[in-house]
Image 1: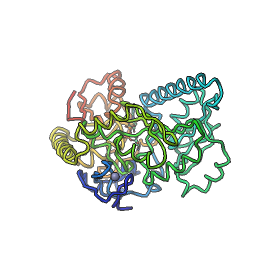
Image 2: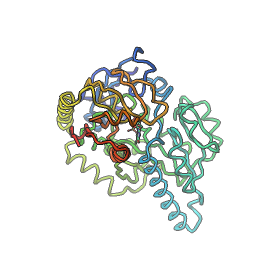
Image 3: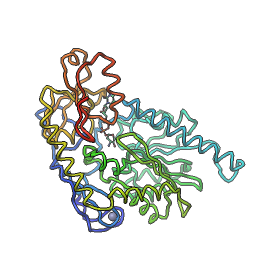
Image 4: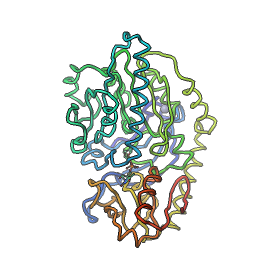
Length: 409
Ligand code: DWN
Ligand code: ZN
């Protein structure tokens, strides 16, 4: 475990702690048995007083975090549709540029893709449906990567030139028109090495598309449970713009999306290029919302304590959880809530236990549904999809949503 003493974007040592969730277990370190021990690590968030990046106070070894990784992106229809929409938008944009180029200068008719943090191939599958040709995918967990289409070269490693001997082998490969990194950039400690490695695979027209949870929504919507040891950084546009500029790149555009409680999609190119007005508008909105002032984060921390107190008062041990999410592990451990069980559709999670609270993760079951009066939405980011599905099965009880404030529906 590495103690963070300097900001990973600007190097400043002026880091102020604004949230302490205690010593918590690793969110995806699911247990085989309730008797298993689980290691705990500090879960504290620091604000850089110079560039306003929020970041964890410690970095847990990624080899520990991502071995036997149980999370599968494709379980959620909502996320699959999000990837479909992303592929369609990028393909339409690519085709428009190809037509406008008069078929030269923009030298790739068929768009090509390198996907970093490919998980089970959820994104690659949707991009292939839109005519992208995958050049290769990077996914550290071999078991997880088995879902990636067989015609895609897969590198089971982390995206870092420093630690990837096979990378030299990949250097013989052509670059790609698009390099995607969805739900991975916030997980990376050395983000400057990440970008330098990406540069090796960028051609003149290449765009890197990075999607990360947006700290604007985390703070304003009290999404404290999105804080866990996998998420090292909690980004605002302001520090990101500085990061890319100092890396000799340009944040050319940024768009907002609802997925996972609110994310931003960053469009990054090599060199110094014009930027969309959206970049500046979002930085201004961050400032207007108080997010360049540590006091706003201390207000967020107080709201988190209120949610904890409200949940402790409301949730009894006959309550069931839905979605054995990483968020759920943070929420249950921080609030010290012990549910009867958690229903989850992910085969790799069923039969296991949430570390720290030892709650069993089981498949949905009609009989147990009929006996249930309250379900706690541990995957509230998919509330519509989950409630629609379970209500359609005849569930007549109540739903509890924990954020932005505790609500019984
Ligand atoms: O960055 C990350 C985000 C994107 O995903 C990863 N580091 C870890 C993970 O976080 P999470 O576990 O909080 O993500 P989800 O996607 O909110 O987890 C949803 C959980 O709910 C999964 O275990 C799948 C489950 N689920 C289900 O069983 N049936 C979800 C849906 C929609 C369903 O219908
Ligand atoms: Zn900083």
